[in-house]
Figure (cartoon, helix red, strand yellow):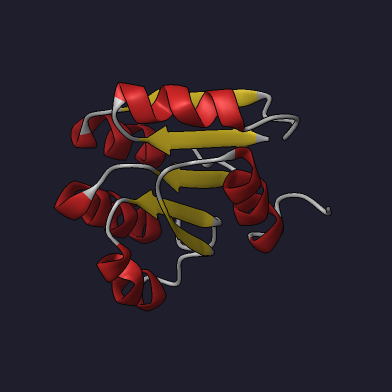
Length: 116
């Protein structure tokens, strides 16, 4: 599975520590909007995971949905208030931090990236 992460280096580390046995063959990580958008514009991943908090996370989710409209989009943030925006953006899974193995597995299952 080709996966793109958009988040701070510490959130990326936390995600990688908790993703368990999810068969991620190709993981590309970004913490700057311009490099994230440039990569998505030239590559088509199996899924995008946004880990950025606040408006940066929302902008990342908007960009990912605009560039890759049919790709599963998973968004974790520290503010549950962005839930209504996630619905508007047709996010496959929206959750709040802190990340855990169970939350990540649930996100992948609900996004139809894994079977069980």
